[in-house]
Image 1: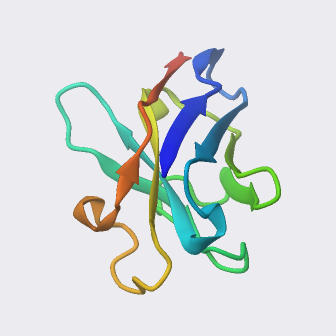
Image 2: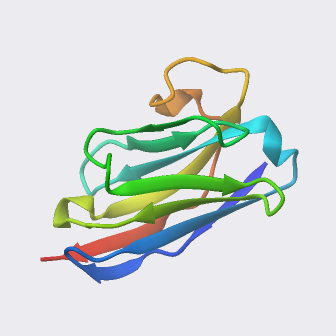
Length: 125
């Protein structure tokens, strides 16, 4: 599966952005989808995950109650709605896909099978 992320940009603290990730080339509904982020000089970290059907989600504690992950399998798209943005949310955001049979460690970078190219989110104070 190939992934194309978009929607990043510059936003003031407290603002909102919606990231999109469109999948192609394989059976999208076979994959759980995740969003990760990587700030300069830091390791890539888990943000959110949604299972293949959209019925189960997980969030990092740092974004819980501010970010919402959703998907539409008919459109081969997953979104990350971000609100209440903080300067510490500044990072390159990546979407990722992994086979839905993997039920373990949804936060683990190496367990994901495909990655998008990343989209930069900058939050100014």
